[in-house]
Image 1 (tube, helix red, strand yellow):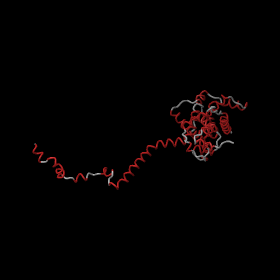
Image 2: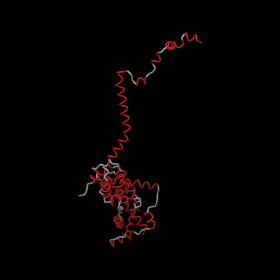
Image 3: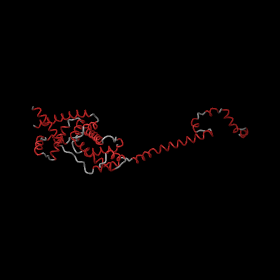
Image 4: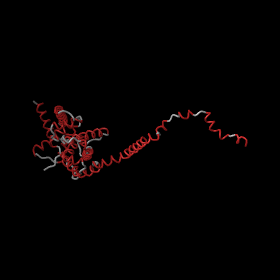
Amino acid sequence: MSNSKKRLDSSEMLRFLVEASPGIEPPPFFPARIAALASERVPRFESMLLALTKRLLPVLLSIAVLVCLVSYNVSRQPAESFSYFEILLDTGEQAEQITLEEVLASLEPLTSPGDADAD
Amino acid sequence: MQTSDAELVTRAMEGDREAFRAITERYQRLVFSIAYHYMGSGNDVEDIAQDVFLRFFQSIHRYDTSRPLKNWLGKITANRCLDELRRQRSNPVHSMAELDTEEGVDINELFAKHASTGSMSEEESERCFQLLHTAMLGLSDKDRMAFVLREMEDLEYSQIAEILGTSEVAVRIRLSRTRQKLEGELRRMFDEQL
């Protein structure tokens, strides 16, 4: 009996303390302050789009220039059978085909008999 | 006619300053009250409330407008309070509630006075809260939050469940145990004073 009385008391006490506890009043200009801060910090959709475009502009320009170069190159290739890629991919096959005799033969006019007499 | 939450949120998503103000005005009491009753003092409450609203507005595009705004803001507030409490625990300071208990508060006197006069001074009311908060210090973070949301903010079990990310049944069980713990703690404090 005594125990149930005591339990009831503590339950009542808890209820009393909850009800007696005060609330808190927000400061008067709080909503206006938050609105001002939020306006500064929360980006609008248009400005987000503008910022995104600005950020992506260099990338988009680079892609456009690359596309122009490649398409220009491709359009020229059949006419002149020349490609920038061939230069880049040149493995030096032509250089290997030139023999020593050919090189000496190309030098012959420089060492003509007339020149030797002069010495 | 009052503008709906969904309409205000849509306007706030477009950066409407007046919508920011209206949402804050509508829910500031809830946010302040949860933070105050959970933290146990008014010291950090304004900072927490400001942080809650700014976090909400900055991530407003992720808010699902089909869900009640009250629950969403309650959840942000609860999380912010839990973070703040963890931060304070890593850098402990004595709360006002702890200090006041050391001086001793006569619960019986307050209770008897309130029962006879039906009124209470601001100071006495504050003492009651400090006493309650001292008893709440022994609770786990989630028990404490559930108790504040139900008993002090008068939220529905379903709302508390959504805020705490649990089921309604779990909230009921948690609250039942929490009340028992608090009553036991008050009984202990009450017995010590006799």
